[in-house]
Every structure is written in structure tokens, then in C-alpha cells.
Image (cartoon, rainbow, N blue to C red; front, side, top):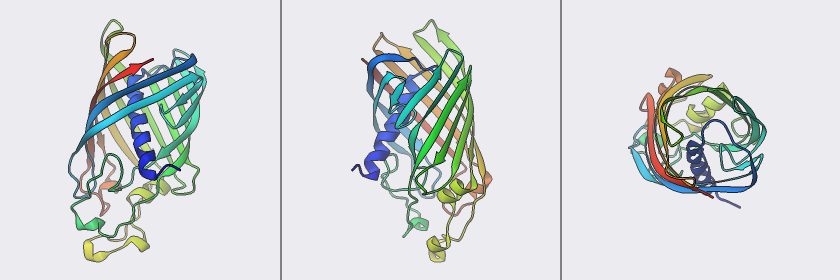
Length: 261
């Protein structure tokens, strides 16, 4: 059985590989694989954490309507047209503080996390849809850990392109988290309270975060693609008021290359 750390590594790579794909999914009649490598930098909002940099592998596979490691662990396309699509699948979701996760192997320097028990990640049922430039993703916990729901409503618009070889996209997204999920990630339960290190009791209701970003794709040939992206997320005030949080924003950047065969 895979450890939680390995699962997180696989799923982080899965989220990065989705950058390679334009919003319209293309069905394949045989196995198609995409692999690659990229470098990332991220600034998280947890107290006492510095910017993280590292190397991330990319890996995904497609067979007919089935997608593996692309926008989730396993996804099935119910419909995939140029202007409309719908898919369902299973994913792993973990936004909580964890000094052993892939993007945050360094521990926080803030004493607030002394003796802190990181929240367990969720196995989720996920529904994705798009209509022209608008996309919606909804995830519900089915593992019984957070019992929470998250929903992302966004828009992706091409703002510059040269033929089919080079394209720059802008995106903006509204991220909703139910009270169950937000409290699971950012709240401090009675069992987690330690006033001596500033970890006071805290309950979070439902929250909404907002993000904006840019992505660029350069198709070198039919197999190789260069990828770059940058993202900025503004956190809800109810999150920033948590004793675990030290910033009101999250930023990230990624650059890499993928090979499809």
C-alpha cells in the first residue's frame, strides 16, 4: 500500500500535468502517455513557512474516455465536445499543514505547530465540467475524514497566441470550501489546543478564496511541449484569522517540459 507521502507526490504531479492540456479534452482510442519534469516555487500561508522550491515529475495516461493522473487519480469522460464537457472521477485532496508533504518538506519555524496533529487527507468523488471558457469542479469527501465539499468556478481565456504552437491563457477562479472542510483544514479543535504556543481554539465556517493566474504553452513539435504558469490566491478573512495562518495569500510558479507518446 502506498504511504500518504507517496500519494501526495503522485497527486501533486497529476495537478501539474493538467497544465499541459487545453480546457477541451481530446478522446483517445489507444493508450497515450505524457511524462515530463518541471521546477516549482511556492509560498504557502502557514505561519513560519518559507518559500519552497523543488523539482516535480509529470506523469499521466489516457485511454479512450479514461484519464489516469490527469485532474484526479482516475477520471471518466461522460462527454467531451469542443464547447462542452462533463467528467466524473476519484481524487485525493489535502490542503492542510503537513511538514511531510511533497511541497512542504521543511517544518514551520513557528512554535504554533509544536505537537500539532496534521489533518488527514480526503478521498473524494469529483465532478468536472466546462462550457466554452467556463469550468466548474466539485469535490465531496467519501473517506469520512473532513466530510466536506469544495467547488471551484473559473474562467480560462486565451489572451495571446501564434497559430497553434504558442498560447498564453489568463484564468480567474472562485474557490468555495464548506464549513466542514474549512474547519478540518484551518480550525483548531479542543484536542489540538495548546495555549502555551499560541494554538488557541478556532472554528471556521464556510469560506471563499479567489485566485488569478497566467499559463503559457509552447508546442515544440507533436511530442514536446514547454509549460510555464504563475498563480496568486487571496484567502478568505476567516482563514487568515486562524492561529495557524501567517499570510493572507498563496503564490506559486512552475516551469517545465512534457513529452507525449
